[in-house]
Length: 334
Figure 1 (tube, rainbow, N blue to C red):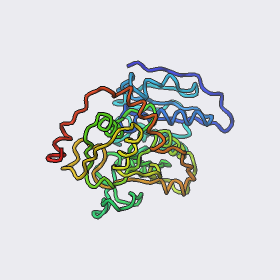
Figure 2: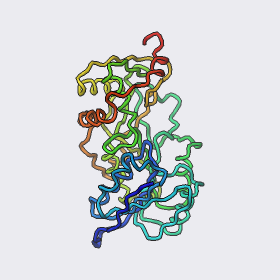
Figure 3: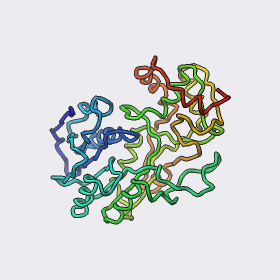
Figure 4: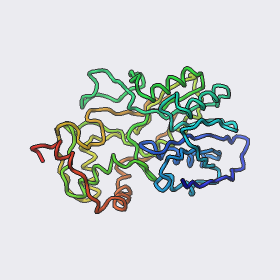
């Protein structure tokens, strides 16, 4: 694996601090370590970006590590092995853990139980929620931090381990991230691939289900709130944009940007290749705005779609779209 090492550190001030970012190999949260490192550096602090060597270094965001400020040190590590920090960190952001018994996670928890940071920030997932049985209709509200979670989910087990450890912890539950230097494109590409190629667009249900799609830069800003104090030693925050759109509305917005009509096919059988949950399942950042005074960035899906379209054309235009699952889901409507 080819990794760029950036070793010169920003000359610190009395208020400057050093952070550790534990970054996974990719997936839905793959760009968060990169965006968070840039945010921390922009605030005048230094950080070590501990990167899983299993990442695809030729792909974004990992291929762009050379553009990070000199106050960021990229340290590759095999995440199948334990890791013991050799320096003190004021803050930790964990964008990897999904099993508290894994070699890396267990070694981090053991170390920070004995040498706790001011705050251990764990990037969990909104996918762990087990909402009430009547929750999920097209008209229901957002997922709340007070809802039950699935005890079998790996992120739930990590949250519980952190709570039991007494390490000062904030857990963030993000959902459906897009943005620059992205690692997972499926959420919006599903729409662009079909609309731009004049293909039917299968959407489960009525299409009035709400989605919380959040720019990764805005997510990094929210995660940065983890440095703030809170009277609780353990707290959970939803992580998503206040700006919500229905599944059908996303299609109409993209149709306007690409200047092509869209053929939405609702009420399909199952979900086919549709990248979102078929039912209402969305979060809002109300709690973190209220309790940590997070100032939401002025980003919105609507304003971001134009640059996303230009990026999509470079990556996807002219490439074949696999519609096998679409046809199966649409059945006689195809």
